[in-house]
View (spheres, protein in one colour):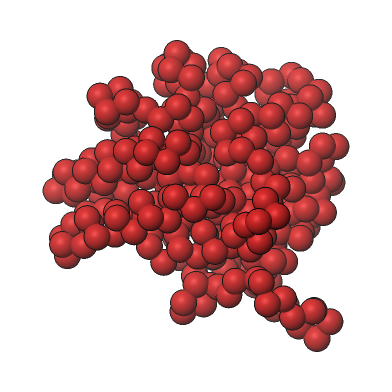
Length: 318
Ligand SMILES: [Zn+2]
């Protein structure tokens, strides 16, 4: 729990979404029988050049020691993670992400309805209405991506696919209409995601969040100028194919993320994740690419700012 006795009250800091911080329930990366260690890992050694976590969910609480969004950002900053893209997955978290970004210079926002959310909304006749609200949020100056959207054939069965596809296509249009990036969630759906992007026309800056493909998909991304964002999964022992994909990706197309509170990098797989653990993934990336760590950090900064623009607050937007 945080100690509020010494903290200055900050009127500008948005409160957690209605109902409080969300509880993390499942971890798709772990066998369900495996017991998780809920202790937060210690902070890693700071990176030589501060980078960005381009995909995180600060609205989740996890583990024994709670970190509220402000604590999480401060702890990240202390180890060389200067900013994050806070990602929404439904209307409530998308609105909250946009508010966070408007209030904090370390945060930019991505807004979307998650692909597993789309069929549920369609069933209730709410998909169109929610998409219009996402479209309104996407016009805000510190909302710099539409995501996470895409296709998930792991959690959604055949009967939900039509709604997923409809929602994905609408999100692609929103990204293009606003000239902002697209963050794709692609789970067991590589071929259909690529086919959809090619059929509809991908936004100029398209990111495969938590890249989960192989060399073949990395080459397709390279051919079309799409970005590959590597998460903690790229550090897992059983993921040599991801590191192989990383090596064939053009250096100008590589990004890094935590997808916190999920996908904690090695050596802490399964424990609560947060942006301050990003340096583990960056260090492993430098090893994989056989590049000096500071050069990899500089490259990541350049790539991330090319995709999302500057984190700096415009004085008039405050
Ligand atoms: Zn995510």
